[in-house]
Length: 236
Image (cartoon, helix red, strand yellow):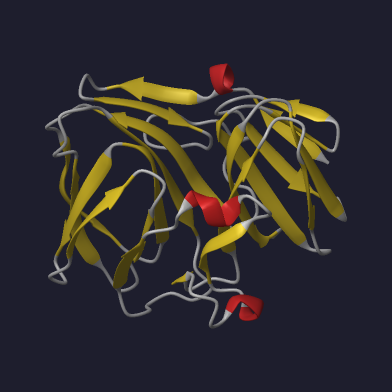
């Protein structure tokens, strides 16, 4: 099963400083058919104007992953963490028992990012934040695991998550095919940050979403040079 959600059908909001598109129900956008994909709850496609951002606000009991596509984002939180994450790199925040944070675009240009929320396996974990550089050259032969709580990824250098799930990324040249297994009871959600692909023969364009389940193998072929981000989680 492959459920393609074209970019033009996504929910969204224009806040002036923020242009937001929502793959799943979020804030004032509600679609009962787009509440989650397994444990994946939120995938927001945000464009943040230069010199603006999200003022301090709270979160709890959610795994929040930010993948920066263009520009950079600067994070500060109530745990005393501060960091700047650039395009192609990733930051995670396990909100756990509660944390307050802010996210600002302090760059002279628009910052574009994906913000992904995954429901944790247990509530009340200790809050945590981390960021890491992931050179894109390491993703040219297959998916690189950026953040994970899956047992098989222990010790592989990925940022830690409190959920049996993972965030992966790959870059493909036009005509290149990448094959990825998907175990029974697992679900994946894939978005081309750039370029276009087919997923088991189904066309998926730039910033479209593809929900995948009940497929033993995912065959992804780039119809043009592509940068891919994918989440793999429990299907229920």
